Every structure is written in structure tokens, then in C-alpha cells.
Length: 217
Image 1 (cartoon, helix red, strand yellow):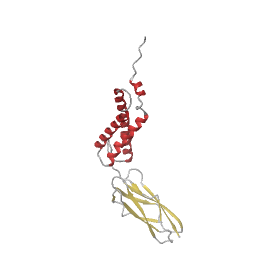
Image 2 (cartoon, one colour):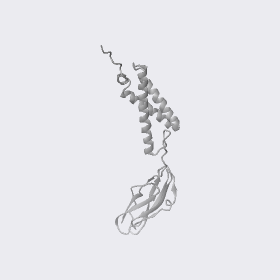
Image 3 (cartoon, one colour):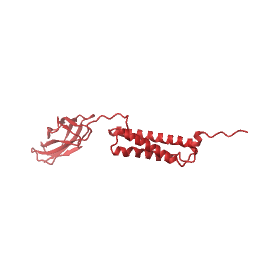
Image 4 (cartoon, helix red, strand yellow):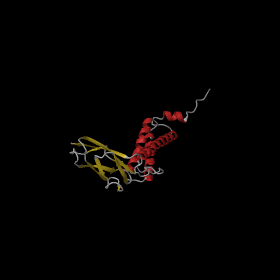
């Protein structure tokens, strides 16, 4: 007579009611909570990692505590749930930190170099102006990055417009601040007039472009 085989660890894990996708989702949620709360109150990367580890393990253990499986199977279930949740949480949060250019939430992640960033309007329309007379309008150049913005020069492709860039070119604009380009519009003839303003800066990538528009009358 053949003796029945002892149940394998895999089969016992499958039979464990608490070792499930629901258990994994609960553990991941707790892991994220253990990450976001200390990060929100300004805890350092090491403290955030410790909080994440502790909360994740406690959540996995608490969820599987009432499972009727053997103690060893429970321990394996806790280990697998906690490990999976930690990998998902740490990887996801780290990727978001890198994409957003934020300081690392967890230790051991290289800091993203602080870069300047620039925002200019897509277009600026000057008031309607009689031919051969001058009116002014402004273009705001905003610094929104992690380091100072520096405008190195401008280009303009129309004689109907002139730009005084003295408040921007050669100056450093701190994050959260802006400088102003003063545009003079002097239409040579009536009708709609347009020009392309190019703003050169220290931000990686192409220059910034602003369409200038006005109407001579």
C-alpha cells in the first residue's frame, strides 16, 4: 500500500487562505503608508526605510495571523508577502523620485543633479498700435527648477519688435522668481505683425521660444 505523500510547501501555501492577492494588496498599502508618512514629516532616508520595513512586516504578519496553516507556512507567507511589497514599494517610489527630480526617499539612491528649468509664455500679444508709433508689452521668464536660471541671450526675427533684455541677460534668476523682457512694438505698416523671440538659457535642451504678435493700425 502506497503511503500518501507529505504536502509540499507550495501546496500548503496555495491552501493558506491569507496568502492571497488580497493579502499582498493589504501589505503593499501598509508599505506605502510606512513610506509616505515619515517622508511627509521630513524624516531622513534611513528612518523612512526602517519605518517601511517595520510596517510592512507587521502588516504581513497581522494579516496572516488568523490563518489556520502551520507556523512554518505562516512564516514563509509573511516573508513572501513582505518581500514582494517592499520590492514594489521601494522600486516604485525610487522611480518616481528620479522622474520628478526629487531628493531620494530611500538611502543608497544617487541624488539627481539639481537643474535649472524655464517657463515662458507660448505667445504674447501687444496692444494695437498706430503705424510708426511705439507701445510696450512684457515677456515673463520664470525660473522653476532646482537651481538658478541664467539667460544668456535672445534673438528676434522682425524689425517691428525690439526687446530690452537687460533685466534678464547675464543675471541669475533664483528658483521661484522671474525676470522680464520688455518688448517694444513699432509697426512699420498696418495689419497683423508677428515675430519669433528666441530665449537662450542654461537649461539642458533647446532654447525657449515665444511668439510675439501685434496689430498696426
